[in-house]
Length: 89
Image 1 (cartoon, helix red, strand yellow):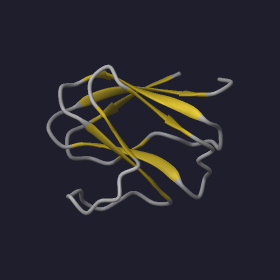
Image 2 (cartoon, one colour):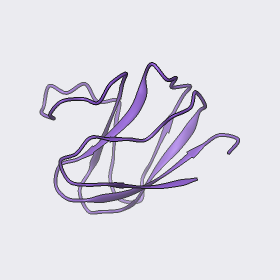
Image 3 (spheres, one colour):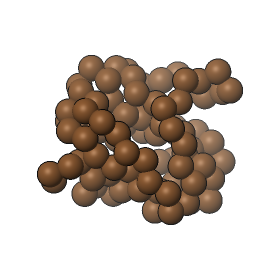
């Protein structure tokens, strides 16, 4: 399990492996949006193609995201703390 800080307004890389796993929104009062992309996304708005959103104490499962498509997190309204747990880790 990894503890990851997501600063407000900054895309933060969550995954580095091709395993399934889970993200848990541990701390922070604003929703966190997630995307799968090969490179760091630029900006965030209503047109951003998100693959999920979590609020405090919610989880998001991801499936076999490889090095060509990493999972990135973005918190617009404040900082957040997430835990990332690959399956089998």
